[in-house]
View (cartoon, rainbow, N blue to C red):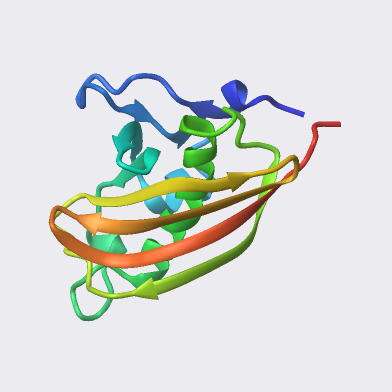
Length: 155
C-alpha cells in the first residue's frame, strides 16, 4: 500500500505563503480531475486548532444559476475531513473512509471567489474521527457541516 507521501503533494505553495498543497499526485482521479488546485493551512481559533482547505472555483464548478454547484461544495467538505486529520489531527489521513456527513446549505457560493472549508476535530478515538466545520467565502457562510471518518490500520 502506498504511503500518503507517495500519493499526495503536501509541499508549501510558493504562490500562497503559509499554505500547503493538498493535491493528489495523480491528477486524473477525483480531487485533481474535478476539484482542481487545493491548498490547506493550520489556523488557531478560540476552540483550538482548525484546518482551512481552499479551492479555486472555475466555470465547470457552477450550476445553472451561476453559483457553485452543491455537489462541489459537498465534495470540498468531504476532502476537508481528511485534510483536517492530517493538518490538526494525528497526521495520518489514510487509509480512512467517510462514514457520515451532515450538511446544512445556508447560502450560495460565488464562483469568482476562493471557497474555503474550515474544519476542526471534535474528538479522535482509535478508529473514529468526529469533525465539524463551515464553508466560507470571506464573510459569507455557504454551509455548516459535521462528519465522521473511520480510520483503518495499514495492512
